[in-house]
Length: 282
Image 1 (spheres, rainbow, N blue to C red):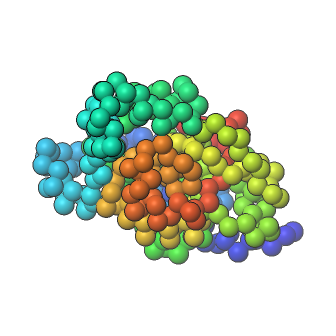
Image 2 (spheres, helix red, strand yellow):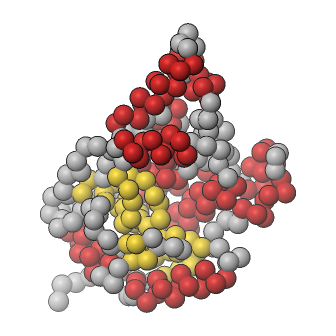
């Protein structure tokens, strides 16, 4: 029998869930424990947005209480929002400004780009801010625990019965090939058009394109170091945009220029299971 890889005893799975929703918390714990053995599972309490609702609409007070800062230029709902980001477009008529904004997303699959423009650039809800902060605090905990491999599941993620076996096989191949990596998507949606290339020596893993959905992923020790030191907690915007911006082209120039993104984007390696791998269902 082959010896366990060096990371085997310093790995853990975390499920990000709210104790304030006890039935969902318990269901997730029971489902994940049954599948993830022998990997240790820790239920990680998420940030409960309603605990901070009384601060609204005072964003300064909200940020102070939550211990974070928001990226307040995130919403792109009007032409004025685009012009704030790109003042050099001021001379154009409104329809041309909005057309330019839409054209930035031509690098993405068209139907996903359309949905993103129509819905995902709206103002963040308090629960979404809390969810982003929950991911960041989980990364902090994993780094403090000196973990080499950290599996992250939101509480509606359900790995397949062979998920652990397949993941361990791929991690062992990465170790054998001395492949440096920061993040592996277990469940995500591909937005970019370019084909994702296979990782040498691996049966399933690909070099990730622009992928969204942070419901299930794996982070290495190297990745934890980068995420925790990035300053993301002082510039909160959707984690589904933050993670892919670190390793692939983001259409919004303001996101590309944020220090928490620009300081990492040249040295962050993300891999992914294929679109049809079904290693995790949500």
